[in-house]
Length: 257
Image (cartoon, rainbow, N blue to C red; front, side, top):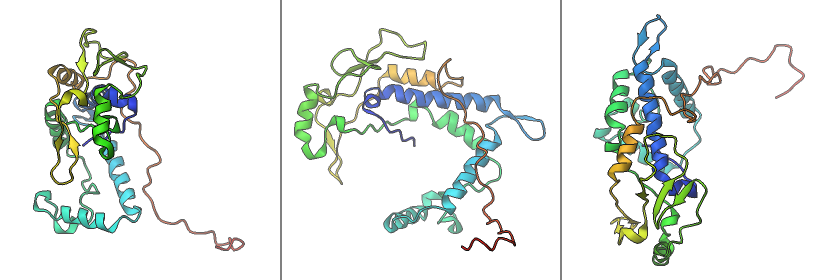
């Protein structure tokens, strides 16, 4: 699951935001296929081991020094971890969903996730914004939406027609200048569905084949387009590994605790 916080401009250009996510996935696929040179000088398929080591260390630190959480949320998490479908052994009910335990990354699992699961065909986008109306004043908000009062136009997204968004700046050369995709418009989407438990209003809309093809092309194993600010993160030299307190000097008696 990917969570992305959007500005008002980002909500109007959400297809481009998803496209960038798939561009990053395509970059990860490229680096996975290129492989890395291990400690024995052998080139191995997969991502460098230091990425896994850093993730494991950060997870350990976050778990070890976590803030005290809400009791109800902790009980809920533990109850979920005890479910049979979660597959956690009894001794890992408390930390099994927080920590990484293997010393070496399972590249076969990573490959399966990257190439078979993280695809546009497996995607569901949940787009939540008060631009679509507020629950406390739902009827009036929907009327405003139908009148087109969704906020002012911004510089990086150009309204072609009502409810139509066409990005101005595009790093992907395969996109046609004439392609116009309709962004989600509550005025044209019809009456909303209602979630039965909480009564939340929502709409369902099929993602167009053109957008799906753009996302598929972006997710191919390739480096990002020139000038696109995406890359693997560098090694972080500040990830802690030692947590013992340093002893005070024996002659340091002039500074009481």
